[in-house]
Image (cartoon, rainbow, N blue to C red):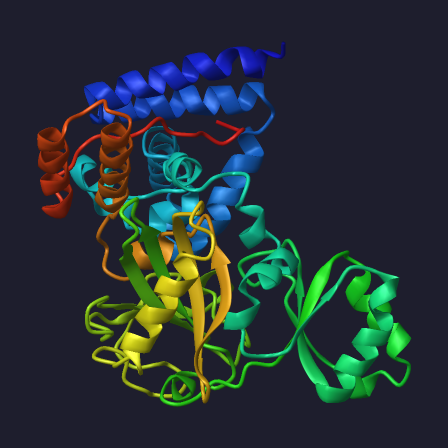
Length: 412
């Protein structure tokens, strides 16, 4: 057994003890940060971790702050402390404005490291592959695409690909396993006289899908015509069979980008699940507010998402296709055919939802967890109907408490 594997369970227990005691004094921050730095040094990751954090610091700190070694050291110590206690990565630390928040506020956030236990609990691991692989996704959700899609697995698909390019000279390529817009490319097949050359290029990285380009419609198109601006709707399929919208936001590109992901430079506006109206200013990845889209000048706050009832109906249908996957971030696009399915994510990121209103949503996950537990225990006979009703009353009032065991990344 390596020293790292030997140390990890003890570090996990120590973390749990610290969180239970809610230690967050300046002295404790200093102690945890320097202990963390020493551990990183032992594993040869000290310089790499600091350098990667410093690169991100340059996006958020002023020149005066960056010039002060004392300020940089103090902020880096707090970054390490937050990584250990709250599970934030450096970008989240700044995106959520943790440097200005109290301990009480910080512990309300969903972070990279505290969300995965919920996903493992709600989403059966034997089924998530249907959403993680785009080829498998298409097989399950074909009727909701409303556009032509070709799954490419190998040489045997060359003839079908040639026929596809005859119908769709320009198309979008998506690797089967990538996410967040990574690896996505738009190809113009007319630039490749020999379609074999193009086929070899897209097949180089393995299984993939090629799709007819989505032609989005106004008013969403008008926000940023260069990108397909998608609605991300995070929905929980309750054990009762009801689809419950947890939060939703509209993502759009900036600067002529053809992708709308915030991590690729886009922005998002938070949307009221009941009305489909954006009720807060848009925010980009750096946290800057936008009342109007910086490229097109279109007004963002107060924007009405079109055909909202149709969107909710589509989300409900999608949620019931694979009921073993209860918590999904559904990406939808608006076209002249109405709302269409783009993709589903069984581990939806929570940055955009919390960045756009600086309001931690860990209570939302706890509420889903409490509802899940109540149904499970009642069906198993662990609790009676009266106790079940009491627990569900707390769920409906959003007064649940408690967490489930956190999962830590390998380098903790």
